[in-house]
Amino acid sequence: MTDRKWFIPDPEESADMTAQELAFAAALSEATAGLVTPGVSDLLIPAAEGDHGDDTLVASLSFSDRDTGKKYGVGLIDFGVHFCAGSVKGGRLHNQLYSLTGATPSLALEASGTIDELADQTARWFDAVLRRPIVLYVWLNDGYAYAARYAFADTSETLAQLYNRGIAPKGQYEQVIAAGHVHGRGWLQTAGLPTPDVYVPIRGDLAAARVPAAVVRAEQRGPIDGSWYE
Image 1 (cartoon, helix red, strand yellow):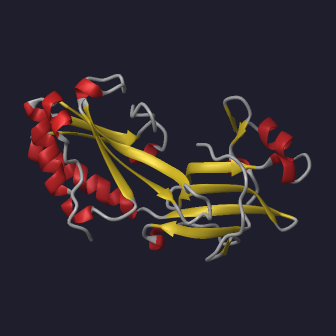
Image 2: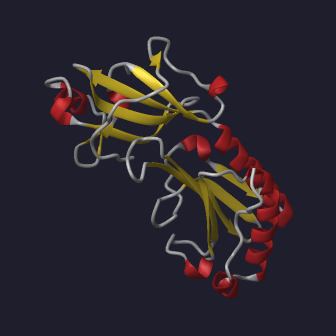
């Protein structure tokens, strides 16, 4: 635990916030005081300063996997709520625009009520998301990790993934793409691969995880090279 609190606007932000925004931020800061932990970052964006396409205040959290051997680790998810006129909508957020993406459907939240009621519901939602189990699935070929996927282990929803075509089994990329497991211009979706070889616990309550029985648990990981994408 820490004495630090989330969602405290700085003086410049406060000048751009409405009375309702200030009240919601204050109530949410108090309601989430018991959730603050190292490694989770908060962000508050007043409606007047946002690029997310709505006249709303954004309150978001994000976290990364920093135990990767890399300088900056891997960003896993930005999630939060849009507050406006007595209601909140929550879910996964775009990591630059902070618009609601509609990705990771299990994160969807909609609520209405007083400011205190919305702050309480949002805090309980943040708590539930932070408790969810996250694992790293890894696929091996000739002893090398050619693919990996961070996922919520209770719903198997992808958070971030990697596919290194250069060391993957021959012909696999084409087969997986042909089967429709692709996003955009050739971004292979690792959910379409065979059962992973190993998984690594990352965070959350693993008692709620539903990992395929054939996947071996590993406490450490070897090098995983390539570009991560959603």
